[in-house]
Length: 344
Image 1 (cartoon, rainbow, N blue to C red):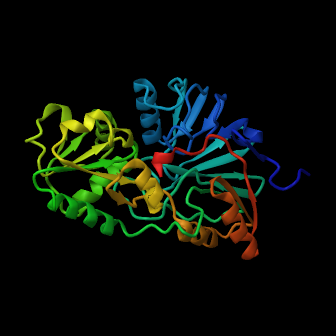
Image 2 (image 1 turned 90 degrees about the vertical axis):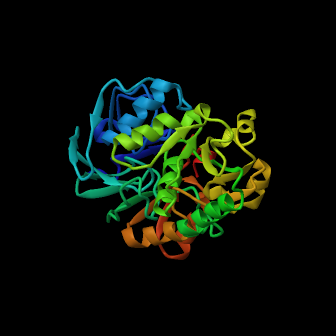
Image 3 (image 1 turned 135 degrees about the horizontal axis):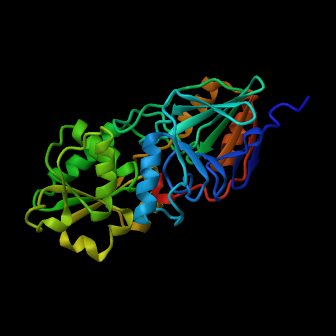
């Protein structure tokens, strides 16, 4: 009889599902990849088969076709869509079920079942409500593989309503100017727009050209973002009193000179660290994260209640120590290429 959980094997570049000949979010091209979501540190191109939700496959196709991914890979050779709640049978008698992760559109946890054992790989996840994606679902298991992007006690994300209030107050205080919000192109930008709509902001929102195609993809998948306009199609006078969404790299770029007297803002969980805001020249830090904060990470581990927790890509040591102090078995995985700074 094989040792418990010997069928799941972590490597620095991906988690291997040994009987199936498959890998979860591999950082290199493989024959069979199970992908949790569309960010480039998880979704690489060039695989023989890519299993992911329809939304994630659409995001991958768009990013690789437009060259927007960090890793200039190829569109998957064979896209294998898996709906939420659907269980697929992989070679070697492994069942895989895709479960919402609440991170971005189409993001998933993957429940793997084999030989009576259950492993959940979360990819990236958050626990806050988000109008742009399905909410995280707690799934009991034996081994829980969790991210730890914000795995330090100092990271506690404020309610999203507070951050939207700051943004709208800044706009109200600059009626002849604009507020320029730096936001990651996949997930963060769409969430900021949707949360502004939920807060009652119905005016047109202006986009940097790099944001348009991903926003339109979200709309095609049923996410209402309201009226969006391109900065390039309008004058400074048109944009007076407006919110503009752009990649973080555009905040201090020559591109921003076309905006009327912009107040620079940045939407990221990293804005909790004041030095990062100062470093970027951000006037209005908005602590808006698409990852779980410290309390949500520890609460999730309690709720899932696994036999063992595996911790990856982030502040692994602090969460590992928390598990030890709470008599929970845990280990840290040394995964490579698992963080995009602005995506926090």
